[in-house]
Length: 254
Image 1 (cartoon, rainbow, N blue to C red):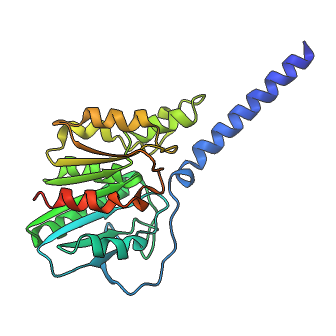
Image 2 (image 1 turned 60 degrees about the vertical axis):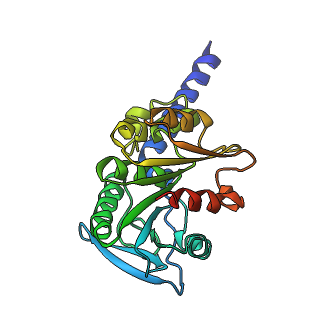
Image 3 (image 1 turned 90 degrees about the vertical axis):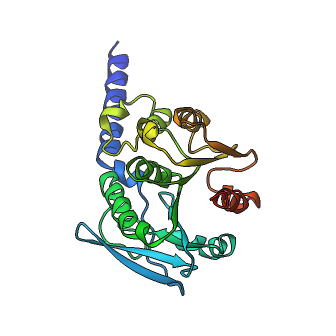
């Protein structure tokens, strides 16, 4: 009996200690800011709530544009060569989140949403159309932006219904919905989206469970176009030759 009591106490301490670490360090598990990278592309600065955001601009002379929000550990500048070639008819803006690349500040859900709105409001009047692409964490930013602004075309790459739902899958023994500071509830705002939507699904995704993507797809109305990459994983979907071609074909519909 004494052994069992000691064991249960030890397990309780372990459970509480790891839970406390998850709560305190949760934003370090969610955001992985990338360092500032030297590059030869044009950079623009946008002020947002006292922070300075760096956006990388490609193909600047076009009348149509794309606004890109990347993943939680993505150095968006690495997309530049492929995006520049794949979308020659669009100006492309690659957004460095707060704390990423050459942007100042620290990333949080509310900060990223506010920054997205600020950038959209400044860019949208300059173009005949401004499409939005969001990958992984960026799908949460892009979805909320499309729910709050008149986005006509929205591309979601390896998206999720909510970070809380994803976290429950990875940490099922914890009440993560109560613990989370940043929920990124994309499914919750899906009904407010009027954009034409393309969802790109990685068949071998082990980061975003398939059920989480499928729930978001089901929440979007009218049903989105869905491109499935059955042999692709979460991080290598963009290596598939179809990846940029699917986005380019979707953008060409406007």
